[in-house]
Length: 85
Image (cartoon, rainbow, N blue to C red; front, side, top):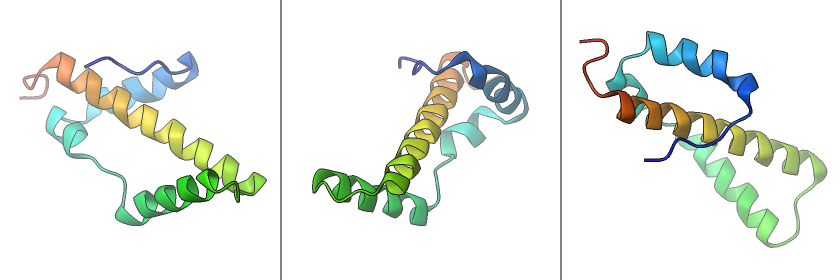
């Protein structure tokens, strides 16, 4: 799995979470269902060209969070399961 590229400003936060959560915690983490549904709604509105500027900002923030979660999961997979065991 390739670790998604993020702005280095996120590195301290990702390091903090990675160092304190277990691999299992990271791999099992998912955003709440309501957040996932909101993202789907915004993507559909974007496809229909009905996204407001505020919704576009919201969707971009969701993308950033998704990239951060993906980066954490990639680190966890690359680091193995024995880090906190």
